[in-house]
Amino acid sequence: MADTKTGETTAKHYLELSGVASFYGKIQALNGISLFVDQGEIVTLIGSNGAGKSTTLKSISGLVTPKTGSIHFEGKEITQNPAHINAALGIAQVPEGRRIFPRLTVRENLRIGAFLEKNKKVITERMERVFSFFPRLKERLDQQGGTMSGGEQQMLAMGRALMMKPKLLMLDEPSMGLAPIIVEQIFDIIQQMNQEGMTILLVEQNAFQALQIANRGYVIQTGDIVLEGPCQDLLSNQQVRSAYLA
Ligand SMILES: Nc1ncnc2c1ncn2[C@@H]1O[C@H](COP(=O)(O)OP(=O)(O)OP(=O)(O)O)[C@@H](O)[C@H]1O
Ligand SMILES: [Mg+2]
Image (cartoon, rainbow, N blue to C red; front, side, top):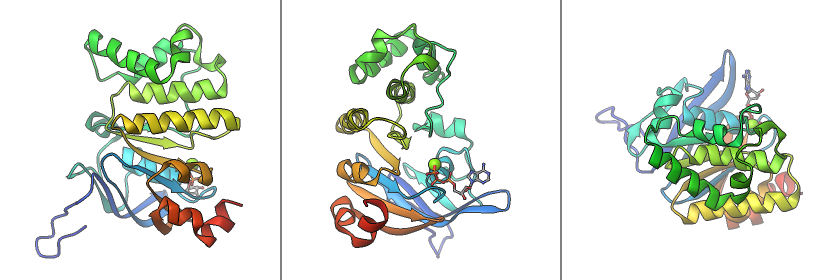
């Protein structure tokens, strides 16, 4: 939010996007979106193919630099920060399609997540925490990432992000391509992580499931936020029901 008297930007929320416009060359993907996430919340961003969900997450993590607008995290402006700076500030993104390293083992994939941490004891503690959420990963430490099932690869991608000990975890379509029972497990774990204090921004095309576990939601359509509110309201909204819950 811009302060008209001083010209300085201020932010009231843990994560706050104000009028963010992002481009790929000449293609405008975000038309000036505003949204916020408070500490301890699960917020979901839903929308169909090409709406701008991934671009929103990339703009926050620093993989895409917004052309206009501002992004604040914990009161600090991070709009122009490169991704490695935002990672160090505690923003982790689990990318669409997992993007684990297929030829590296589960252990190696997890260690890459802790690349900023040099202390071996701390790394071991973080791994134990990852195993508390995903016991399967502990059983498969020496397996190559690429030979894991889709659900296991999603767990590995989430585990890798947890190895950063993030403050804000952003998940880009974690349910994509997974069987309903696995989706349920993944969503249960997202809720557990949240109960342990992690703030979560969840991007989903699977609107029904996402609205079940989140506190608040935003609907994005061709680069604009068109609806927002508590998830109960969105679940009963006629527009949402016909477009995303059919
Ligand atoms: N690297 C890129 N170069 C050019 N255009 C891009 C690039 N990435 C995304 N876009 C365009 O930006 C718009 C938003 O894409 P984005 O990936 O953010 O959508 P999305 O909501 O994540 O879609 P999906 O559900 O399919 O993942 C789309 O029109 C897309 O074609
Ligand atoms: Mg996407």
